[in-house]
Structure formats: C-alpha cells, structure tokens
Length: 220
Ligand SMILES: O=P(O)(O)OC[C@H]1O[C@H](OP(=O)(O)OP(=O)(O)O)[C@H](O)[C@@H]1O
Image (cartoon, rainbow, N blue to C red; front, side, top):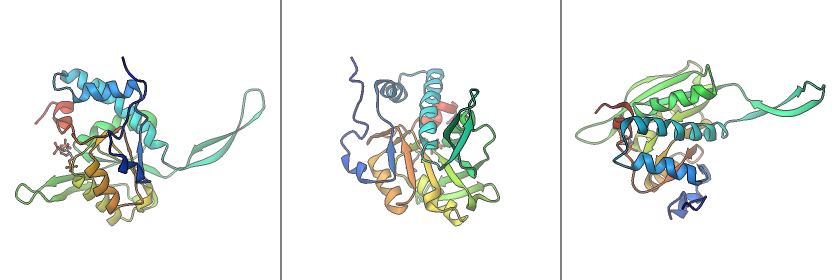
C-alpha cells in the first residue's frame, strides 16, 4: 500500500536549500511512474507510454515557473473575471537526443511554441562536453527558455547547454530546465554554476536512469 506522498529528495535535504530547484510533490501516482521507468523489466512500449505521462506532468510544472500577466475576461453572464495569462515571449529548447522526447509534451500545452535544439557530445578521450549543433529562434535573447532534458547524471550536458544559451544572450534567470530525474551531484553542479536559473524535476536520486534515451527511442 502506498503512502500517498513520498520523500522526493530521497534524503538529500541540502537540495532543498537551492532556491531554483522545484521538485514535484511525489504522490503515489508519480512514484508509480518513476518506478515503472526505473524497472529494467519494463517493456519499451510501456516505457514510452509512462515516460510521456511523467513528461507531461513535469512540463506542466515547468510552465508554472514562467511569467504570467494579469488578464480580465467577461464571463457568459457578463461578469468580470480577474485572471491570468501567459506573458508572451517564451520558447522551448531541447537537448538532443533525450530532450526531444519532451517536445510533444510541450507542444500539447503550447501549440505553436518555437523549439530550438542543442546537441552536446562528450569527447570520448577527455569526457569533456562540447556543443556540436545549436539552432535557436533569432530573438532568443529576449525570451524565457524552457530547456528540456530528462536525465541529469553529472549535470555536464545541461551545464554546457546553459552556457550556450547565455552566449546567445539569454538571461540566466530566464532559463527553466524541465527534467525528469536528476542526481544530487547534478543539482549542485548546475545550480552552483548558474544560481539564477530554475530546475523543475520529478525526483532527486543518486541513481540516474541513463537508459532513458535508448529505451524511449529504441536505438543505441
Ligand atoms: O548529466 P550528464 O552526465 O551529462 O548525463 C546526462 C545524460 O546523458 C547521457 O545519456 P546519452 O549520452 O545517451 O544522451 P541522449 O540519451 O540524450 O542521447 C547520460 O547517460 C545521461 O542519461
């Protein structure tokens, strides 16, 4: 029997001191999705289905970190409702390849949002991350960026990608990373380097499910 809400920091309480880190409330439903994705016996078809469910939840949470503006509407009964709407000027950027798995989740929420791409590869000899491809909307420096990458192990891939965004003029405080699983080490690495950015994730755990890209796409 589940306990309704779990410890999504898994004992790494120091992570909570990072203001930019936002972890989904780990209710039983989220824990079940995480369990299925971490189970080595999960079939590829189930993996994709349940990954898409968790992606949608993380994307929705990340969108909550973007700026809103006041907006009044008139209801069918003629009343004024004081509401909110997204401030324009957002875009997505996916880190190839795993980050591309999150693009549909973002499009399901923001139909025509522009999505840039970055490909970061680790040097086989030095293990240093280097950028081999980057394409962004022309005016990216004026936008808030939802950066998408599901797994952070060392945090090197994401750190490199954030560095590229900053080189293109994006303000650090305008970057929100949408992530499924990250290690406590990656939280430290990324947020020590870029303390003004935000991370939205479903879980901080020392074991990174590095099989994500292979299993989601079915390629090595
Ligand atoms: O935080 P880092 O240590 O940089 O690692 C992030 C992810 O990148 C690697 O996957 P892979 O090279 O298979 O990436 P891909 O699935 O995006 O192709 C690694 O296995 C992690 O899953």
